[in-house]
Length: 366
Image 1 (cartoon, rainbow, N blue to C red):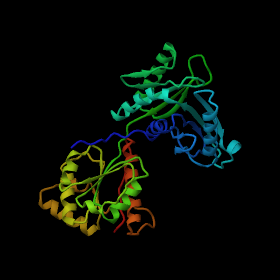
Image 2: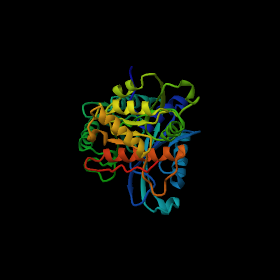
Image 3: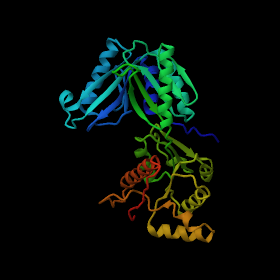
Image 4: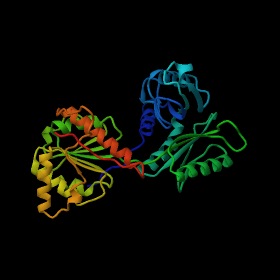
């Protein structure tokens, strides 16, 4: 059994789809922010003549960015350029900060650097895409720790860009940065850094809560494997990032899942839930293991696993009841539980990205 666990950055997936569909598109990326702004550096969207994918925060900023991008699709001038948006003064948004946004037109010649970036993403390697501001060519450099593909049209410029990008990669930074060349005051290059951050989620059980949860996970950058033996109980369609797995041996999914996965157990059977948790505890490289249920069910799990010789400290890693402890959130409706669980997964994911962060998973009583 082979799994495809690598996930492309959403903008990269979107530009590939847009060029396949429309041949021309504009990549819009937040490059620098100051003060209060809707999105962070690195937030991106892709604009074609008829559609958009992704978001840089909505509101008038996004409306104006889409307008400028579509104007460029009609009358292209530069391949890459920047626009500074003082949000209060220019677009009337009350957040009042300043967002500097990079616009890059894409055409079929862009496929070469997009292919190189996709190869890095599939290999789960950090990489940087470098474009020259004010250029009329669509070429870019794609730089990783041990490789560089493409060109900015000048060997000396390529060397400077590769050195700068690798320094940023080695420093652990992410997002987008504008870089002036030596001796210049204005930015000459835009460096967009992407780092692999796998969000593999295994959902066991296709009952009401499972169905609600995969819909919520469908709007997150997760790669979801939805696992159950009951083929007929799966819906006819699922979100794009969800893969249905019909199997009579769900424990095999736990043995083969990638390190750092999130495991959520909510089947129709207490016995199956307990068996899956026991299998999961044979590994210690998960980011999250959770089981639906009450505190009484958790106590029953602890008695059963204790009798099988599993140490109490191993059982303490299991979250049960599942779901974030949000003030006033006590509902047991499938949608309420799904939202609470998704919030908990996001909190764990964010904490795991900060080496010294600590997170206490207090769950509501169900």
